[in-house]
Length: 281
Image (cartoon, rainbow, N blue to C red; front, side):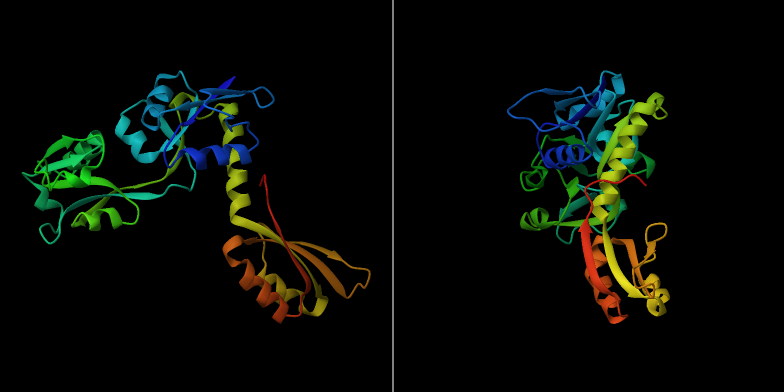
């Protein structure tokens, strides 16, 4: 059985479970189960602390895991990213009291509070900045006011929490993070891992595209195809009235209403949009 770990709590948990469920795996718990066995897909889903997933994968006791890129890099575990998953995007930034810091060099000789010691230490070392890293398990925004640190380094999504604490972000972005599928380097070419990747690819495409069907007169077909070139190429079939064509094409979800307006203006009729639930491309 292929073992896959997902976060048991936190902001990564529900999106990870939803993605695996859409990919055809039995990943939803009825209670507080620690593991779900999906015999039909040949996998076991383990629910673990987000910070521990990279460690289990790196040691080989779990084959695949879904966690944050920031947590993977901070773990120092022998696991690698094998697919980005497109959700839980965030930036890792430095922040300090408003107006006191401008760039990375201002950190030299200061205390930096963070929950991501290894990530921050490696970044500072790579940029030859000498600063003391102070480990805190959470709520690092309070560390400056309480005199524990001069600067913090943390995940920033909207920045509202930092502003409420009187802090401004500054300097470069340490890391662009998102949810990722991880495995040991030895498993990158494993066929079972490739199956999981293909299924997750299918979910990501299905979320990003919709299918548009419409009828168009042959004289207007060329103009309509410029609007809907499709993922590879649209499907075109003649109707009973052979001067009209039925066209099926994949369209970016975010563009679908604009595309419908443009098609109608070009003479398309019977325009129907269908959501995708899965795909293999």
